[in-house]
Image (cartoon, rainbow, N blue to C red; front, side, top):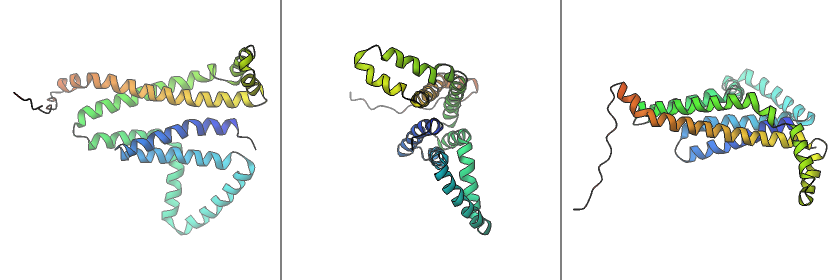
Length: 219
């Protein structure tokens, strides 16, 4: 059974975000573990529901889970936590930034850069959600296939793109990748802008800049 467009729309961006957050955990940001977990849970949930067979199996498993959870509250709480996490990735990202700020040596400076990064990310993602569908869609993929068909060496690609159902799937994959890149770019831009003004903000609050480590020089 072929993979649906709806499944790709969830799994492509969530898979990339999950991988990136796992890498952040490996690079010393353990607070990002909950974000990686939430993104992974979204993928599992989407896979469980993308066709009738697996949806039915998932439904039966969930029924058994619910019966078991009635007797054992910790299991019930865990199940609700997973369900909440899949629908609240952004609050978990915000929470991870709060934890990062709270554990940083320069709490004010870190707080400023994290706030700027999140503001940039949410602004960028908001704009993409409003406009991406206008540019990346099945119709435009079909138009691109028409252009590719004019070049002899691109005819196999054009044929694949024109195959029934493939245009919407290709659009979903491209849109997912563009969304991830835009989100990361917006986060990085917001972080850089906030970092640039961090010292000025701290100075206006009367906070002394962090002392720079001395470099031993040989005379």
